Amino acid sequence: MSNTSLRSSRRGTTEAPWIRWTLTALALVFMALFLVLPLAAVFTEALRKGVDAYWEALKEPDAWAAIRLTLITAAVAVPMNLVFGVAAAWAIAKFEFRGKSFLTTLIDLPFSVSPVVAGLIYVLVFGAQGWLGPWLAQHDIKIVFAVPGIILATVFVTFPFIARELIPLMQAQGTDEEQAAIVLGATGWQTFWHVTLPNIKWGLVYGVILCNARAMGEFGAVSVVSGHIRGQTNTMPLHVEVLYNEYQSVAAFAVASLLALLAVLTLAIKSVVEWRFERDRQAAAELPPERPAVPEPVARPAAA
Amino acid sequence: MSASVTALPLPAAGAGARRASARVLPGFNLTLGFAVLYLSLIVLIPLSALVLKTLTLTWPQFWDAVTSPRVMASYRLTFGASLIAALVNVVAGLLVAWVLVRYPFPGKKFVDALVDLPFALPTAVAGISLTALLAGNGWVGQFFEPYGIQLAFNPNGVVIALIFIGLPFVVRTVQPVLEDTEKELEEAATCLGATRWQTFRHVIFPSIAPALLTGFAMAFARAVGEYGSVIFIAGNMPMVSEITPLIIIGKLEQYDYAGATAVASVMLVISFILLLVINGLQGWQRKRSAGAMA
Image (tube, rainbow over all chains, first blue to last red):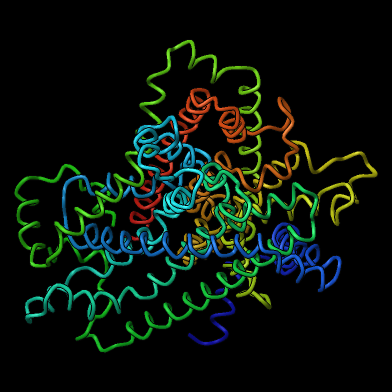
């Protein structure tokens, strides 16, 4: 298409320049007010009393304990949901079975449950008055108001992240490549490792970083099961709340600024992953036609 | 993908043939078994604990807990503020998605990435930050204070926090649909003499309406359950600015497990309904886009 025809075809499908500029300006002002300003405020408030006060707040032992607990929680919860996500996506995307769409809906369920309700259900199962409460007390096992409860609540709220990223991706890729590998004599594990995994790696990374961001930042669910014991069962978001309610504004925002940095880092990695994924897909689309690397999802029922 | 949505009542012969050919791949029993077991342990059994606990309450107990004046006031605030926030998000989200898809401007990649900030920023951080901004002496609040408008520590703050939380849902559901709309249709409309506004109203809007509605429902559902960002800014005055999730926490702190469970079960039922509505809307949207392609 030549340059002039492109320009003339565009004239019919876009607006007058002043409308374009007004709409763009409105959108950017809205984004600045609602997204940039809150992010900037976190760092400004954290540094309100200078860099020294900021470092002092972060060096505090309780802050360290909170950072450590948050890292432990994410380090357990994310791999658990990763294994589940891969297993669920393999079963759902590569096989046909009854109740598949129902199972997919159930996987999404934790997203629609309020975090507070998510915390409450674990109190009802493991709490002193809950189902397993008396048995746990007898054997001196603490789950609620202790670290295991925090991890369980975090696993619940981050449950769907990786699975829902992988299911559509693996469905779109179909089963042809895996079937070819099996027919050529590969074991199931080899097939997964050498055929499936390279195809889903970007989706996997994408799901993991989103899952991790939520796991480290979860507040409502964790707040219900934590018991708020300073230095023991306070994660970073809970520690922010404690400091804030004690009017230690600078300290609260200092810890919050670490979480905000995590959010910025998450968004940056996410953008890079999207870019790489798009590049890989385009490279695959440009391959010669005898090696169709990205089978259309529409073709699947015919092949099966 | 559209095949799997209606896959439940498969004809017997087709299902058998499909299963036989799919079973070339190994690991079905292992992965499905593990997925179902894990789902049951983490999600289904704990959720059923809530249902069973609710069933042990007598009817008057349950009814008193979920309809006391303080709880009713919290429903009004939670659902009212969520509705307003979701409506604002529909307008703002459409605007942002439109600008991101249609108009070139410098720094677009950055702005596009920024849309997901509310997903990535922990809710407690958003809560204290918005509070600092909107309080009477904050960067934004100070401009409203002289006119007697309070943005924080009342329902206004709740709405603003919920707008922040819900924005990406609308943008991210509308954006891909806008990218896929066919320019040919718009050109045809222009050729037939439609003004730009008529083209938008009669050609573009109908094709993005299902996505807008889905985004609205998702933003609304998220707002109803939201806790972290709201409690800092709400002021949490009983009957005035106390959201329903906070009622549950309050009851728990007073060891009123029965009351907390009753209110939580109401919220859970509403979440289920919203989940079904969203699933239905997404199915409708897929059907619409599939029909458009054919």
